[in-house]
Amino acid sequence: MSSLILREQRGTATLIRVGYEISFQSPQPAPMIVLLSIHPERLPTIRKSEQPRVTPLVRATEYIDRFGNRCSRRVAPQGRIAFSFQ
Image 1 (spheres, rainbow, N blue to C red):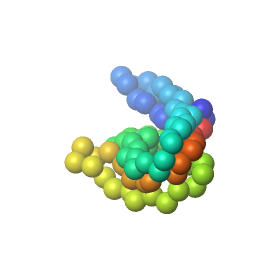
Image 2: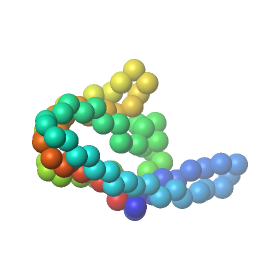
Image 3: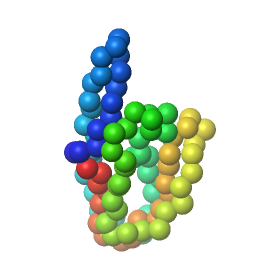
Image 4: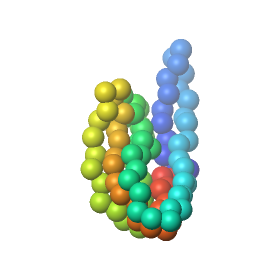
């Protein structure tokens, strides 16, 4: 995990390290809605840009939900799909 978020509280700054590795195994293609991005309100406090990875690379449609979350919709192929962000 190597993305750093600066959090200010009472005049002091705290660095928070963010990251994940998640994988799914499916017996057949499956639609997925994935919410793994940092909320857009936090973007001004991020020191390092997000560069999430998906293996295998699967085309996604991205959108913002009614709560302001960044979402992506994709159809995962049969077998394993992995998401990571470090």
